[in-house]
Image 1 (cartoon, helix red, strand yellow):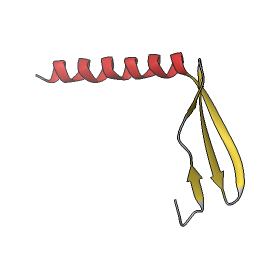
Image 2 (tube, rainbow, N blue to C red):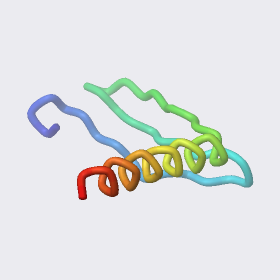
Image 3 (cartoon, rainbow, N blue to C red):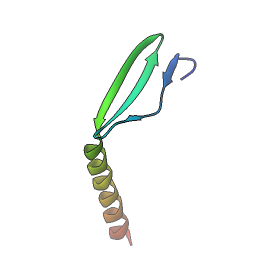
Amino acid sequence: MRKLEIKTTGPVRDDIMLQYDYYVRGYHAFSRYLDAALRMHGTKLLEKYFKEESSNK
C-alpha cells in the first residue's frame, strides 16, 4: 500500500454507522456501513462456514 500511496484509518463509529476513511495519492474518500448490516453479513458467513464444516465430517 505504501508503494501505491494508499493510507486507511480505523473505523469511526457512531450509533448506527461505521465510517472508514482512506487516502489515495492525496485524495480523500470514505465508505460508510450500517452496523446492523455488517453484523448480519458476518453472522451469515459464520453460519455458512460452520454448515460446510459439519457436512465435511
